[in-house]
Length: 223
Image (cartoon, rainbow, N blue to C red; front, side, top):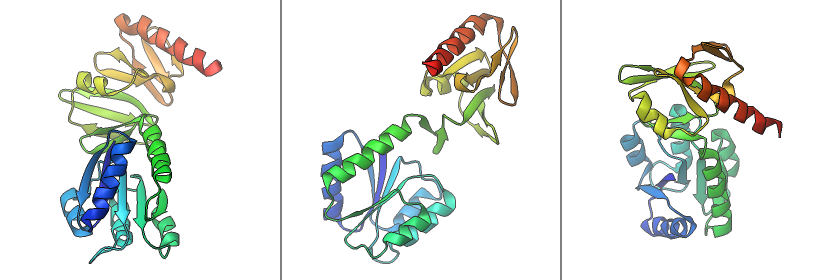
């Protein structure tokens, strides 16, 4: 799990590090000020969780959270503070939780467990978090891939074979240039399939594999 922590007191950073080590494998990036975090991240927040101390010198954690939210409305935010003064403002930035110092390990561990469960169906790609539940299919174009969702698509610099190694078993190669999320497939025909509003080609060599994956997925749904 990748976690960012913005805190201007080193002793608090060490306390959190010790707790995270007790919980499990975590990569922690520490920022000593809001200004440092904003400068180094430059509008991109490739983290599973951002933990913010509210009472910091210069720009406080709540102001920082508002700036983060302008660039990234989804990344989970957790506030750690010694006062309840800002608790209601946390709702403005869609904060995940608000923990009072000293941190209770059981509360922190429960939150980390929730985050870990939610990230099992997402990946980080070139600094962008990709929601695999929403991804319909992938189309290759030279050294790039188009990631296609119901309402938008985005282009990422990565080969389709490399991307496939980052995805789980629900993504099936249906053609040398296409991967499909089997959960999105509605119907399979001899040379094509339908996935929502999309019609995609199916290579003859992949028809059996795709059909078997489709049957297994729907068998699991019916149980």
